[in-house]
Image 1 (spheres, rainbow, N blue to C red):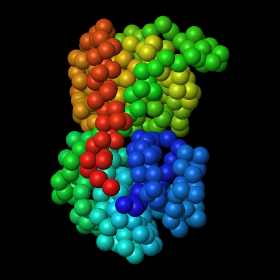
Image 2: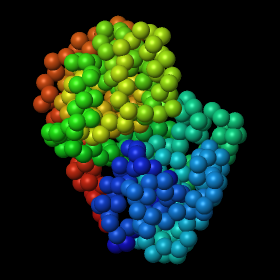
Image 3: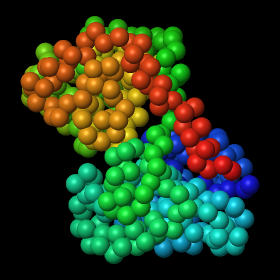
Image 4: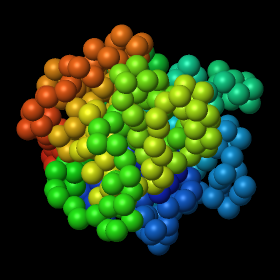
Length: 363
């Protein structure tokens, strides 16, 4: 059976892109459709159908493109697809083709109902004036289009509950794929990576992600101060300078590792006392990757991490990041057996995702 895979827009990095990459591997004959493709090295252009928005400056202005996207998804052109699989975190589940695919069953994998319009408290971009003005009519359309799906699954229980609350749709759950074996192996560091690792303290708390505000890396720095431990922040992004200023203001010992290689990231995980993940995520792939290295995770007891981190086995779930809470959490995760942490990570392995997807969409 020939299919079509639909995703919002394609970027070089991101958990949603990990899902799409896995889906294209499972269904290699399916055509991939996106509003635009900003990752040609990861998703070859010849294999991706872009929309008209890709030829406009709006591909760089997501908030301004927002009101045009629902209509764009409704006019994807002719397709012979016998099924349509939408990977949606905004409006991709609105997708509609002409031709035979117009009548094809639509399967929707939901990373989250659009945070911009449904949960602006979780995404500051939804608080901008243009988005706030566009949100009421968009919610009505979004809810109606969600009911077109033949079947819907969420990437976590937290998102499943959100789907029911916002769309009134019952959904299953298939957790995103994590390539656990990529993090359990041994890697030899090249000279620059070995030097970078050697320059770090013998133990520290680790934070790793894009340096953006909602990841709350400021709380990783404050956690280090509370626990009396140095902090290593791995990644890069627009909040770099603000994080450095905060570290200086607090007198915290913070080491920045910009864009580490995979081998260095694995080494950073393994040397750390714990991976600290304060963000409230829909799922959160990096905490599972940390667990795959045998590293305990300190994370919030809400959102996706409440499903992946097993308190007292693979880390500590906390209600907040106050000084007392952090100190107690660090004490609790020290000495947790690495084997049990890795075993927990394997429950979210990519092979589990593959099996669940094929059971859900028996193409």
